[in-house]
Amino acid sequence: MLSIQNLKASLADGTQILKGINLDVKPGEIHAIMGVNGSGKSTLAKVVSGHPAYKVDSGSVILDGKDFLALDPSERANEGFFVSMQYPIEIPGVSNVEFLRMAIDSKRAYLKQEKIPDEEFQKRLDQSMELLEMDERYRVRGLNDGFSGGEKKRNEILQMAMLLPKVSFLDETDSGLDIDALRIVSNGINHIMDNTRSVILVTHYERLLDYVKPNFVHVLQKGKIVLTGGPELAKKLEKEGYDWIREEA
Amino acid sequence: MQKQALTRIRELGFPTRKSEDWHFYPVSKLAQISALNALKDTPVSSDSDKLNEADFGIADETDFSALLPIALGAKVFLKDIPEGSIEKGILKPRDEFSHTVFYLGKNAKASLEILENKTLRALSAERLDFFLSEGAELELYSTEEEHAGEVKFRSIRIHQAMGSTVSLLDLNRTDSLCRTSTEIFLNGEKANAGYRALCLVNNTSEVHGFVRIHHNAPHCKSRQFVRNLISGSAYVSYDGEVFVGKNCTGTDSSELVNTMLLSDNAKVSVKPILKIYHDDVECTHGNTCGSLDEESVFYLLSRGLNKKSAEQLLIRAFAEEVLSEHPYQAGQERLRKILQKLI
Image (cartoon, rainbow over all chains, first blue to last red; front, side, top):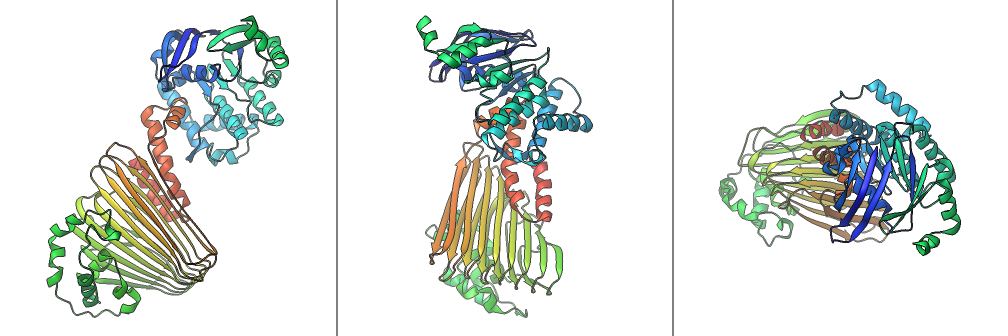
């Protein structure tokens, strides 16, 4: 289980972005985080994944009993945390497949396992690419090189499907997706989900939640979770916006 | 020809800090080399080669280093590749001063690797001249050795007739002071030249690239693509000029230099020059310089790669793009093998 308690984090210039986040995510659960621009949603993803631009002021992040904040970003990934970036970077010159194999083998080395056998890798890759309706070109193309925004998001979910993390933090995975791509990516997420894994979705739009049904919806405001509800909360936010929460607060 | 080269060198004199073409080079080091100081007394050997002096443009040559091997009496290795033939080979100079001349007949094809002599020398200078007839194709690739403490000059002169193609690929990982002077003359219509280089230097090595591409005929194409990965206190300079003559309509040229500085003391100087004397042309140039992108490193860390692997992957990816743009497999594979060992 991922447990975030009273997490406060700042930028290097001292500006505090996260002002006390509390969030418990159990295996098998899907949590959606919504909120206005600048409320701290992406910062939360980056802080939990260990981005060096942020300094943790106080609080704790525990995954399956391990102090996450004491680990470096690669260790966090290898412990089973996956963050899907809002703006995935491009690395021309390294093929998608080569990169996926490196990432899987890094995790296996960390877990003191042998490198992934070719057959197992190919099988998992074939299944994942089929699930995400990705054609053969994606194998040989450079990592995200020249990909459209939607293709990059789809490629992020391909990585998720290959790495099979315990907790996936998907930061605006739906932005830049057309209706068909949204359906495909959502199918992918649902397929990867099982009762041993959990997903945290950051989104601005309720439409993603029509495909990936969350157990909980949280509203983040000024660096704090100010409201938690079920899927109906997302529908209300879509309809009424965030002003009513501000007024209540 | 030796006499002519000596005369020309004496006319030009030693390069100085004021010589525009040697601006980035530590010219003061040349004065300490005895072989160069002896130039004024060098005897002229009986020149029995069958070369046509005019072909080599000695009288108009402005590059001291390109004259050097001839002036110092380098033996000439001469090779004719007849019309339509295909040749693969290795060029390896036996002496510290060497001169290699290739004539490629109509539609002849050659794939040549330049190897270095493994003997450590205080000074070495080689000159390679290539004359390509109509439709000929030349792939020329090289990998510098990691000799330390040498002063090295390599001069390449290429003359291209109509429809001929040249692709140069160089991996420079020298630990010396090295200057490569390349001049390509696109003399026939639709001639095509590609110059691609990757400098992977460390310690106190210096690599100076000097490239001149002359578009002397219409519809010719040239590409310069250079990537530098500089560590330690190494220094790389690149001085690349594209000249487009009158009536050279349809010229297409591009020049791109990307540098990654991997340490605080690494240094680079880049000078792109475009001299264009015709309107209907497309000539571009670009130059970037930076260090490893922190966001990219973080992205790879977030996928479980450790810091060293992440940085190596980014460096390899940066280098790989030069290789993948080279259109021939032989050079690509040879350099990729070396890179895999290095990175």
